[in-house]
Image (tube, rainbow, N blue to C red; front, side, top):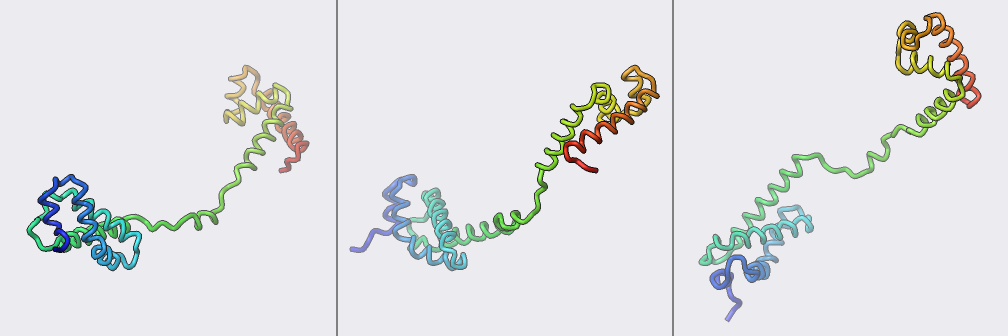
Amino acid sequence: MGKPRLSHWIRRVRPDDDLVVSALYREYHGPLLAFVVRLTGGDRQWAEDVVQETMIRAWRSAERLDPASVSLMPWLATVARRIVIDDRRRRDARPQESGDGPLESVPVPDEMEGLLHQVLVSDALRALSPAHREILNETILRDRSVNDAAEALGIPVGTVKSRVYYAVRALRVALEERGVTA
């Protein structure tokens, strides 16, 4: 007597029983894999994934499978073909992954230089007198006009103008001492 047909297993066991999957796998794995390898253009890994998904779908649908059919291969082949089609559509719907190669050649700005400049300017500002730091803070950093800075600091407009002039000169000297040139 030959091996028991799948119909024998489907009648004997509950649809959620592992025996159905084992019987399906033993009987149809080889022919289904050969069929799917052709569908996937020879990509064996993809074909294995498709066969596995097909077997899972068959297991989930075991109660709907026709135990009287001679072979489940037509049903399994249809399911596998649909999985391959869906996979291709999914792959075509998103851009092809190209790896990190192109990204490695994209120039990335070196933020270290900007950070170094910030440290140098901060250090140079600390070297100024408090009055010069205060006037540069109001006019340059807070972007206030001479009149607005005079009002905020409570000093005459002429004093603001002369402090800005001398503060910028002192800052330029402090920066040159630190190796920064214009």
